[in-house]
Structures are given as structure tokens and as C-alpha cells.
Amino acid sequence: MRRLLLSGLLVSLGLWTLPAQAQQVSNAKVAAMVEALRQAAPKTETKNDGLYSEWQITPGIIPSWSKQCIGRELTPTQLENNPVAARDTVSCIMRRELQKQYAASNNNETVAVRRAACWWMTGDATGCNSGQMVTYVQNVLRFYQQARSKPTNQPASNSSQSSTPQNK
Image 1: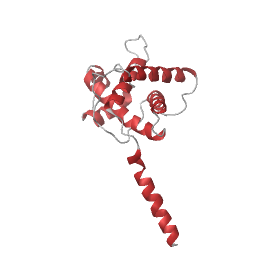
Image 2: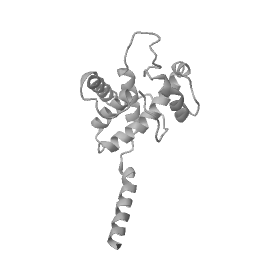
Image 3: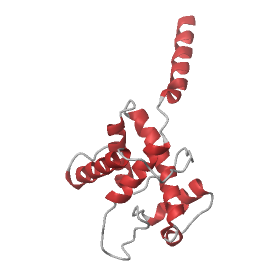
Image 4: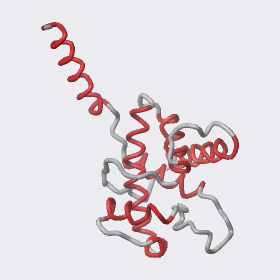
């Protein structure tokens, strides 16, 4: 019984310390990811395509994300008309998601970026290994690597969020 209790305690302590071992995502990595998502966003050529801001965000998630990230709930139109609020919101959400994906990928930057890109487009970090999704993820990774190879002049939001609903 004593051995079982001790084993349980050791497992609990080990699990409790896991999040602390995950790599902290730098502002530069968040900024590069945010820029990559902006560049890879679908270009629909339709003015009222139902997606908002340069990141082409679905409208249903905007009030929740903006409230969590900038402290006030914005409508899709308000976010569309406020590029700073849009970038801050996307930066906040991507900081949280990149942190999760770094942990899930054993701190492998390429895998974390691919998983975060997949999550951004589908709401699931896995399953973007074929069709248009693999092309989108590859584009995000390419834009990310380009952004990481040059200095950034757009600081990422320092917000750190816990759980929020998925994007799309």
C-alpha cells in the first residue's frame, strides 16, 4: 500500500511539473506566426465573404476572443475596422496555441507551427496531411520561416490565455 501511495505521489508530481518544462514561446515566434497566418489567409476576392480582418476570422469567435485578449467584446465589423485590435487578438490566441503545440511536439518548432496552422484553419491540430489543408499548412510554414529569418517590427501581444473555443 505504501509503495502504491508513493508511486501515485511521484506520478502526480511528475505530471504537475510537465507544463513548466514546455518552451516559452517568444514574442518573435508569435509575431512570425501571426504574420504567416495573415499572408496565408484565403483571398476570396469577395468583399462580403463572411470572414473578417486580414486573418479572415469567422465571425462567431470574434466576440469571445476579443473579450479574452483585449478586454472588450468586439463585433466582427469592429474587429475588421480596427487592425491593431485584430493583430492583438490574433497574437494573443496564437501565443496560447503555439504554447500548446510546442508542448505537444516536444518543442519541435516546425511541427508546432504546422500543428498551429492546422488548428487555425480547422479547429484541430491534426489531420492537415492531405488536399488543400496540407498546401495551406505548408504556406503558413514557409511564411513563418521567412518572417523568422528577418527582424520583426511588429511586437506580438504579451497576453497569455488559457482555454478558448476553436477558430473555425
